[in-house]
Image (cartoon, rainbow, N blue to C red; front, top):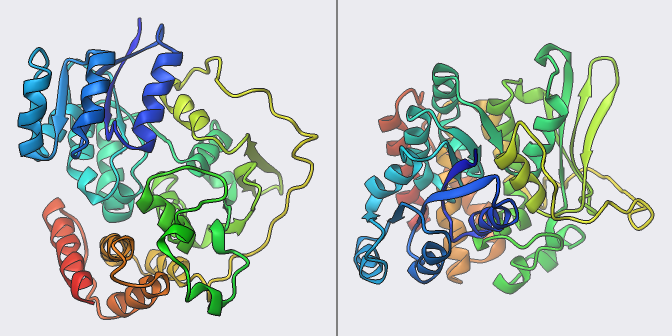
Length: 379
């Protein structure tokens, strides 16, 4: 029996790769619902290829346009539409691949509908880690992280006790600017920052990778995914990105997950879990990848990473606020309103003025998120 998949964020990088895996494993996977923010041209093509039973578009006007183009498939709109896809009764599995904190409400809907979950949205755990992880435990949900680093940790930890873990070590490529001086970083352009050395990703994730904020988000995620003390979560720069992360155990043993840096592998693992299926990638070539190097991240030049680590240790609403403010600042950079270095400078000023609060409800989380966005727009 085929696993029935709902894909939230089907027009993005993770979403389109999910559909590629569905083509590859068409005997095992069926796409039954798709949703996205506004790219109705690609949604139309996806709907015609996969014939889902439900399509959602966050943009209500574009949802109406799309409905006319695919009258045989129901098209739902707005946040309610995204929730409908995430919790679709005809799906066994929800791939949560929508960027940003906008994916939080649909993610909760998927949990409450008791779907197996593939999580590719860092911000869900960064904004609402305590709430989200408690709901996962309450509803006894199978969740597999899709980020290459977290998929690596998930595989290394499978069958192990948390008490046996000494450290979780997340690897980072270092982005396109790892060897740049502060003077050179002052001149970074949007085009420079979008040129990731190893992966092709969406614009927001690529900019976060260039500032190393992305690695900070992953460290925050790890705290909630694996229920581990922040002091035992580290990051190292590994330019080749052949080791995607590793776990050191209390006896000194280290387990690492290796592969070519291609998101198709962790996406397929998440979709087929707990089984493994024949993959798309060719066999790994150890001779071609004969040199692996590691060094510490420069947290002075890449201030966003240090801010994320500090917020993780401080807890409360700091990570939620930091994430929302960063989203706005990255958007302003992409619109060429601020410089690349201004992202970190403004983020530090914003977080230093934040009055922390406990986040125990969805309403409180959304309130902090909105406040951070409003302040970041005028910072």
